[in-house]
Length: 265
Ligand SMILES: O=C(O)CCC(=O)C(=O)O
Image (tube, rainbow, N blue to C red; front, side, top):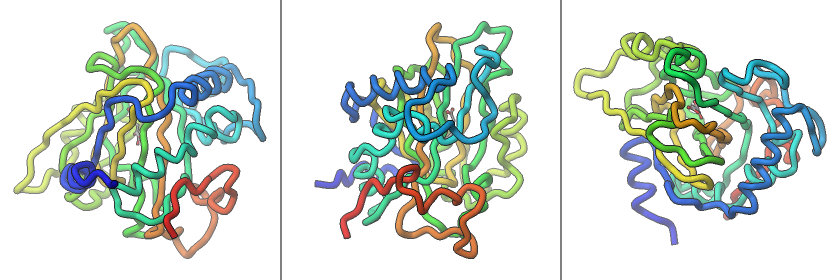
């Protein structure tokens, strides 16, 4: 039975949070092993991840973001293709088909107060970075927690209802470390307010967010790493620009990288 409250919340706020674990702990544990191996540069699947901002051996005290890690780890692949992820994405969107099209490994170390500027993720709409998709494409993200995410872990913060503000070109800055400065550059529509909501969850929980929902995060001060995968999804209502396969859409015909994780057709 679809959870209508989940869908209603997603449509109203532009995100939904499943705070309790929805994925089996064995799947989460295997993905965690995969994450640790990839961070060491050890791969047990087809090939290395795609070119990334962070590479094995680099500074452990900065945000680690690795592109397409499912290519390099069976445990990660099994997590991102878990049917629960597809079912929940279908529930919030009403879609009859869901595919993973890109994945990012995100490891945010816990750091000292003085060092906050190295791990922040500035406010952004994902759509800004996803111009390989035709306008109006239905794109969303499942952010899967591999560690408990509390208020002190530098959780993702969503701006409730901002998916209805339209695409605000030029306002996004994922790399912007001064999050207040990024925020001051965002033109909030006259009849709207900026209301931030943290996505708190336990390991094995997840959030889903719309590609126009503003979000960002600040430092992790929990004393433990914040570990997750951002799994970028599309529904049947999406198409690459000119139907070309390039840049971020270049893997979509390869289901060993971009599995279809829901279909009711
Ligand atoms: O992990 C974060 O704090 C932000 C991740 C993000 O921007 C995303 O999943 O779209």
